[in-house]
Image 1 (spheres, rainbow, N blue to C red):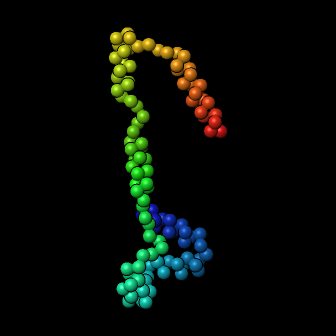
Image 2 (tube, rainbow, N blue to C red; image 1 turned 90 degrees about the horizontal axis):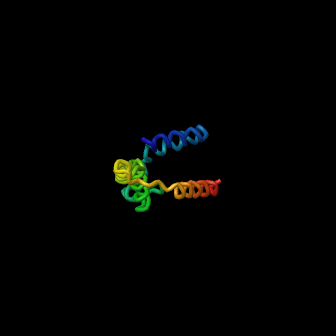
Length: 109
C-alpha cells in the first residue's frame, strides 16, 4: 500500500532511535489509550480528508487519461469530404494556427 511505502521511507530518513520509537508507537497502542474509550472516539491529527474538489480533480484526470484526443466525428467528416472531393484546405488558417501555438509555447519559457 502507498502509505506503507511512505511510512517506510520516512522511517529510513529518521535517526534509527527515533524511527524505532515512532514505529513502536504506531504499531502497539499504549495500555492507557487501550483502556480509555474516549481516546478511541477522539480524532487523530493524522486523519486524511478528501475534499469534493480533490474528488472532482481525480475524476477529471481519470477522464482525461482515458481520452485519446481524437475527434472521430471530425475525422469521419473530413474523410467523407475527401472522398466527395469537397474538402478545402485553408493554408493561411493552418499557418496562423502554427504561429499562434509557437507564440503560446514561447511564452512558457
